[in-house]
Image (cartoon, rainbow, N blue to C red; front, top):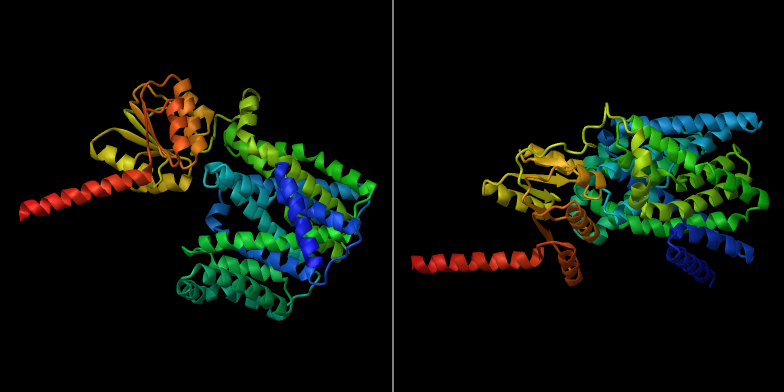
Length: 519
């Protein structure tokens, strides 16, 4: 019965939060506070379930870590610079308030972390996870997660045994792990393998006197790089979220915040705009354009779930007072409640603020990828979105000796096409500056193969508003998409699967005709 009350409360409060355009996490925390106020106490198993959720979280972080992505200039300068400035300020503040310096430093660094869950959700919903700013945000989040892991190791309170160096043997187990992954051909087996390896890494680390979270992270890093790890990370994401519900419920069930704690949380929330401004300034100094810097900064202007985890560990170790658990839980929940709707409309917000923000751009030393193409040369055809369909369109036009240029918002996709000697440049279709500054005088037609319907509609609208008189072709997946894009000004739209069927029938008939003529 108690399990039903807890899970049901978390569900209904999460549902209410989502209906209010807030992350369900806010609802889970409120459910915990409500259960505590109603006189419920946490189950004995709840902390253990929460620990499993944290291990799965860190394991999935390890799967995504790519050292090359962490050593880019904007990642190190922005992510590292922000952490150092916020940590230094928090240390001075706690020294001035005559508080514990070590605890203040840990708290300050924790508050410099941004919400991985919210940022990934927003970028994924907007189709921007693989864009330039999406990759920068993800890399900075991973850098912050690594620092968080170091904080957890410092605040854990356990003394590692001399055998702790055995953790360095985990990467050498990669061939065995890859063999197991190749043998696990079913989706269920791959999911079970991921959970097993995350828990095995945690158990091994605990046996050596190290936090289980460290072992789960190292195991994730060891398994990362395989072609199927993306599938494991995707499947573990929902499972990990389910286990983490216990963690957020536990925070609320522990105690209710007092009025003074609530005021302190509000004071910390008042610092959020300054954090966002600091991120924006650092991105600008790293050479990014105002639009890229603004959208990236907005995605990072939150307090992280990791702040709850590190604060909890610091309190257990006696480095922070007990009251900080309630303060930080309220602060994190409030930051997510503020940031979620703002990120949903980040591009609209930038359009309003564009005249002001573009004044901060550095014309010298601008990042190579984050530039608007000043010329398309003699190109007469544009392909926007260089996935499978876009690449096929590009190859078909190039094969007919047409002058064609491809655009894509994923820097990795751009690099791969350049390696194939295709003329492809970086360009984000949501960037109003791209359409405003793109030279279209010679262009006869534009092909839109973007996966998101909203992006195709936006591109058509901006092209026609620009006065483009050439042909516009686009893909569609549903009938209502077809009607809307034709209404906005597309000359023709094609369903990729229907066209594949037509081509297959033509090829089959052509082959049949050839065989009959040969007979």
